[in-house]
Length: 262
Ligand SMILES: NC(=O)c1ccc[n+]([C@@H]2O[C@H](COP(=O)([O-])OP(=O)(O)OC[C@H]3O[C@@H](n4cnc5c(N)ncnc54)[C@H](OP(=O)(O)O)[C@@H]3O)[C@@H](O)[C@H]2O)c1
Image 1 (tube, rainbow, N blue to C red):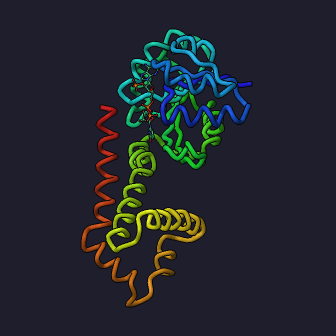
Image 2: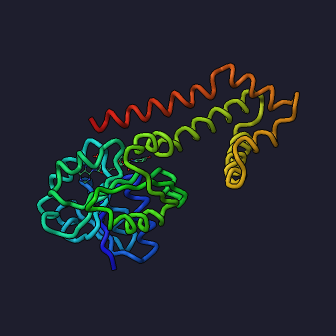
Image 3: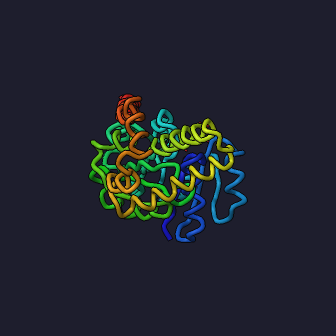
């Protein structure tokens, strides 16, 4: 059984852990600096907990670093002596931190990988992209298997990671912003809030299903009757800069991801 260690029992690390535990395919350890963060996993069953990253690194063949971007170097420095001369591999989920930076805090020839997941992992509908340095290439299939337990996984060149971080890493927040705006708009038109909320969630769920086998343009054209209500909405939304706002938002997130790595 492969032994997996997750450093950082937060939103991403935690989602991954519970799904991996449910699969019963791995020996699991989680480390966090906060004992209260670990309590939930202690009770979950099938997950070893520790406040020592070194202890976790000793016990694990594959280590996933799921701490904030500015904590990654510190975590790597701490476990680096244990990685030295071992066959262990390390993957980071941190936004913006390139493999070249990870390499500065790990032994030479260490197998280092990156994954950009999103928070939909917590409901098993996450999307993740993965990449690796040369030494990490042989471990990519294991990384893909691990993240397949929380959603879809694709390989992507590292040069596109800032863009992917901006697109799907932050993506659930954009969709939530749009959902909130729609609910508010419904309330403004007089629909009770709980009804507006159900209608909007159902619309997003249903549209996501339609988009699986239709292009976005096809869905738009199916809804938009010439001279009708949707056409009027599109003109008003575009006049207010809807598409431009989306381009600008994703572009700002990609720039921020790049800056985090500098
Ligand atoms: N959340 C998302 O939607 C999302 C999406 C894609 C990628 N990511 C990436 O995933 C990473 C984790 O994000 P998250 O939202 O899951 O963070 P989070 O909820 O804050 O979880 C990180 C956990 O690790 C702990 N920690 C900090 N330093 C540590 C150390 N040296 N050793 C062990 N544990 C330590 C943190 O404690 P403190 O709270 O004291 O720091 C916290 O409990 C980030 O790098 C982020 O860029 C997040």
